[in-house]
Length: 442
Figure (cartoon, rainbow, N blue to C red):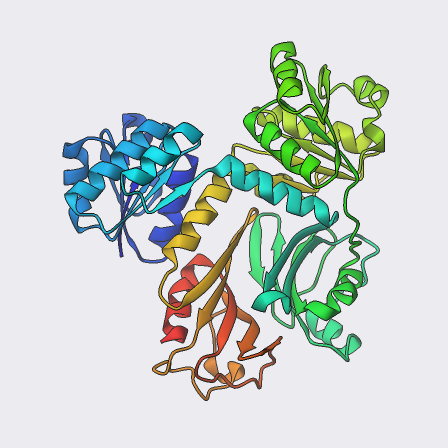
């Protein structure tokens, strides 16, 4: 597939790297010459220094022959214009990052196939995260019959210190599988010899009616938040606060800028708004932040968000989540004093990757701290996997099948599970193995 990415910021460069690693033909257009040079040195793709909305740059990139154009620069206007111009040159599909609500209708009228708003999507993710505190992911497949559960392993978790083979011998009577472990920024597709360590971010597949057993095994507790404190008065803070209040969750907002916090107080009358330093432990205690179920640090500065989370944990808040602009920090800080890191830019990249996976792919899930994807793919009549057991397919180490949907049945497979026509497989794969998923589908 030929893909043109406009804008080499955090979203564009992340997408270009992921898609290039999968073997896609990627061309990047970046207006900043120094940044274009950096990306050319770091990523195996063609980089063009130019204005992504200009006819000349788009023509040089061969947009007319592109299967997909992804406009994700920092400017909404440039993204809309670039997507429109790409359509006039003959591009098949176009995606644009647009955060300004006033531009969304105009962009759709110009024929953009998919609009993404990273802030809105991240706000939704944060609210879902707070419905099950301590659970980093709870993703439903097969109309709610299979769950992909994520969580960080504490010292008292039953799985801590055990290999998966040992765990398989100890836990019987129900079907489950650990599909991946994220450890110090590295994703390990799980095997029997893999040992679970304290601090690991474990991704676990189980049938939904066994979710409580899965939570207990991972040492997690499903407790929805009742009171949340948000540090910051950004658009993400505003959108998240509105959604929390809609869920009936008491919400407190803290920011040091009086004008911004007063503006939010006027927009969100149901929230409590306080002017002050969000990293000041005295202020946090005086405002009762220590009685919150969770703190979301959503300011515009990574260092403030990290410090705010650490202070919140120090005063006794059980769950702290930091918004991070530098997506490489998400993998480094998650689970080390901070329960989760989120990046609106990674959220945007995940939405786009879900759109890129087409054909027999029914759904795609991405993770904030991992390059892995959970892909639900249908097995066609021409698939070489039909009639083969999972064990005999000899998948690469970067791929594992975590679930099978067969008609009205959904289950966690074993090594002797045979693949049948029409099966929908839930495959967890690293970027270098995504092409293998396409081969399995036939």
